[in-house]
Amino acid sequence: MIIEKISLWDDADYVQLHAYVLNNSPEFQADRKRPAVVICPGGAYLRTSDREAEPVALRFAAQGYHAFVLRYTTYFNKRISDFAELPQGNPRSALPQPLFDLVKAILTIKERADEWLVDADRIAVCGFSAGGHLAASLGVYWHESFLREKFGGDASRWRPNALVLGYPLTDYPALLSGMNEADETTKSVWELAGLASFGTSEPDERLLDRWSPALHVSERTPPAFIWHTADDGLVYVSNALNFAAAMSRHKVPFELHVFESGVHGLALADETSAGGSAHINPAVQPWVDLAMRWLRKRFE
Image (spheres, rainbow, N blue to C red):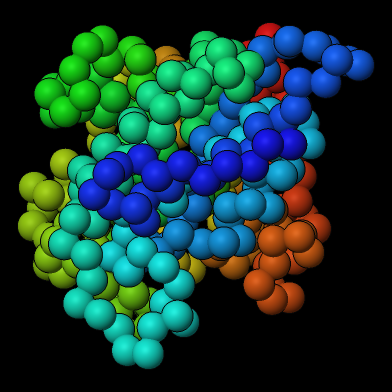
């Protein structure tokens, strides 16, 4: 395996694409172009989680994918535990900058597709929580003018071929409607997350609607595999349900799995990505095989 860290912008070295490229062995499937997946870890746009990064990439690599982890622009841009005191944050973290990072990542992969033997027509984006929001955002906004103005050319160059969304945030109004019953810790997390993703801790309704992917699904949205847990206490399951319902209305292929119980941030739901015992959930672990099976069907 070739492992490489690539800075995507000259003036923001914290935005990196971590590549896990399978070797081109002369012993089997020589010179075969493989599908790729871009993984967007979660972290409330405050940071990017390690648990939803390399462990997920290696699981995809084991199934024959070239895997790429995107460390996109976030408020802190490194582990919160690494700070002696919290900084004022990064004013560039507000949307659409993370979306620009994701488009740049896909374009970078396609530019090096021949070198890495990537099948440029089989690139999925897999995101978790806020990373799921980012992946879903590319799925619904890829054709919009603000991205064409930024990158130029044909917008289909950065359209993903499939989405894999794990406990994604897709509907800010739905999220906030249940916030009255949330505890103070959850409320404070979302207040800081709002500052990170919107540039304000009190975004207005227009801003919330603008960046709610479930409200912008169209017939141009790529197919999606979506999974969530019914009792997720941080990103409510309504986010997955509303996105899936919008896909259904627009007749876009999707597969939805809602598992009965599990904390937010399960990642692979096993020991390889667990931050504690609550992250080991055998009932949820099948999402990985289900997603792989669904992707094979889409990419066959």
